[in-house]
Image: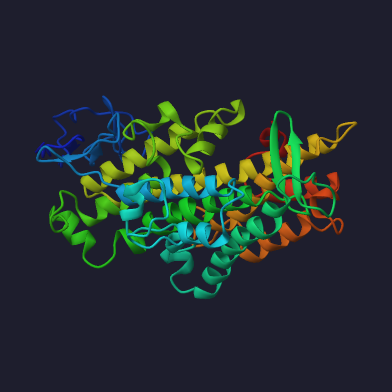
Length: 433
């Protein structure tokens, strides 16, 4: 048997062996071919032996943390994603400042470099903006400027509605047909005449249109990863000008940044999930449900292994991990959509309906339903739900009476929940609690 071993001096170690069968030798590290992913995790390698049990295929070490280096220099960079997540958090704070103008919040959303829009001076100096990355993936919107414009207009509209409808009634008690404040336990919610919290629509809508869309439909897309000469450059370790990383490595890292860009230790982010108000928070919430425990680790492992596969020039493994991430993150969005619909239903079903609690939950549910159009079926070019389907769901949610959520029925909430859950591998009951 001939063996060739190539060791790359990185945070991941990659092993290549080639072999020829020799009846007089036992293959090194021979194993029973029960696993076929070809990936080395720790001390064990699962190899597709094709029934012959000659484990000479490439093995990739999945590192313990998201740390990758080239010649001793860090190659992981997702600063732009961290910046946009910070901008998003400041924009959400502005939704609760009844002295803010629509122009101010809109300027924060569509920030221009050097404008004094944020409390954080570094954000003001940035050339990034949240609006420019809303519904901006190459896969879904590269050739769909019409829907992109409609979606961005909806976010602009929620800003205007908060200022024009809710802020003037900040100290008015909300009731059916009247915007204002409403109690939710020890908290106070501020809702529209139809019971909607526009800040929740904006927040949860960005989970889909910004973080999920950029991860699933942009940076993990082969259109982006393999663009131009990315494969040749990655194969030859040709880095971006003035950088330590290849373009392909960087694109994968940018996807990672939208999930973990604000974690205290982004290399091991599951220790403090909830570090931002967007996807990161809700990966943690779903993982905290016993029915879905482990999903956060599955997402993290796929991110690490996919990045390690890029270093190893193994694009089949890279793409397999991308498909896992697409499925799991899409499932997180769907679970939370159903969860909030059912929580709202429970609050409304009390002997004395808890309207403030219900409207808060249902507004979050509205935002997560909105985000379903940005999900992605694995091994497919389609979202789990089209924009048309999502728009219909949202009309139905507000369509039981002229006062929107004040009139919504259990029948509608259950029907929407079932329609969402049936496309995934979970039940309404599992997502509800």
